Amino acid sequence: MFDAQCDLAALVYDDHDDPDAVLRDFAAELNAQGFRAIGMVQAGQCADSSLSAVLVHSGETLLLAQDPVPGAAGCKLDLARLQDAGTRVAGALEAGADILIVNRFGKRERDGKGLAYLIERALDADIPVVIAVSRKSFADWITFAGGMSVKLACDRHALDAWWRRVSLRNAAQITPDHVTVCEVFK
Image (cartoon, rainbow, N blue to C red; front, side, top):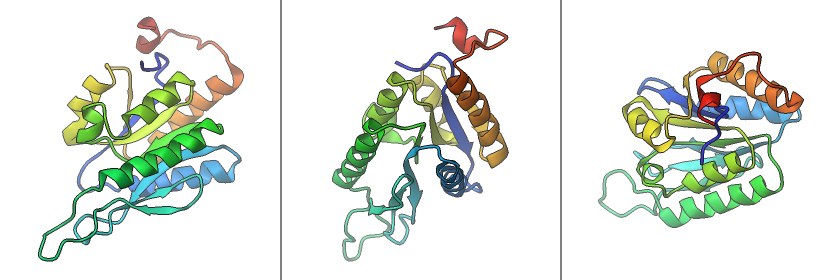
């Protein structure tokens, strides 16, 4: 299911990191350079029921939280809204993409639901994928990805370095000058 050339990257973040800003800036720069970055980045917070996602290919913001319930603390993810956002990303992916950006790896993706199908669809089409993964969920991520993932620090330097390797390899369709662990298992 997963790309053996490690076109799958986990942007691993801690509580003090802002993976959304890293991914949002990365996507904006790629799109400005003429690449087609598809996907979504989280915006807003559950604490104030503003949990939403920005589609990086269109700039559209989609609410992901359920409508507030009077007296309830925090918010809940509205699965129908998440599915709608995923459908929009899938449609954009079908129109062509250079990279898929997924806002979070969570419980639903761990269980093969949520936006997991987008990851599989992109990798099946040889489109690199980057996803934000909490350090607390990294062991679940490795299981989900079958170990076939690059672990990136939550910063632009690491993300840009990975993208340069992946995009150059994909653009030139060249064989690396060495065999990586990921390629051995291909």
